[in-house]
Length: 211
Image (cartoon, rainbow, N blue to C red):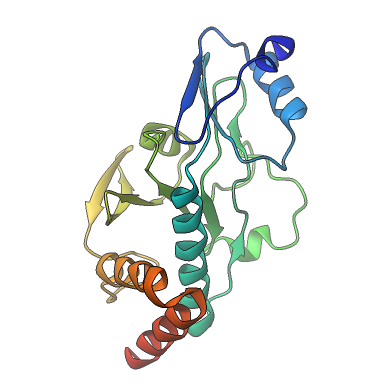
């Protein structure tokens, strides 16, 4: 399997699907590819997807992640960011979010070197930039991630897990009272015009104005 994978090239914006991949093969592929890579993997009961993000995907991921961190810093909310850590439901599923955060469960996860979803809670919030059709809400739902932010076609949706499925809501339960879908998109676009630093400063000023 690994020798065969080395013969394939997944171009930016494209994805490769592999069927009938065992859990042991998935684990071996993760080890072989390592953590320092651009590709993102998703595994669901034998189906493995390897996706290569577009440059604009990476830009949006970084800016939106920075905005979210700035929001929590301004609100003095402790958080732990684990980026694209692979989260696994052993033997069945695995997903690598664009960004993920422990917020409510940050105290319980503070300083932990290894995360095991058999005993540890899933991230409180996951972020998906859906430019390559690789978003898997069902996988996040199966792992029990309470909140999912999806950016698609220039819009942001906040979704919360209710009865095993994601439902779009107007406000984030972690940040009630803030119109984040609109404001996040506005400052993402602003960063494309004036640069990251100026957009972040403007966003921080907006957050302060809400208190």
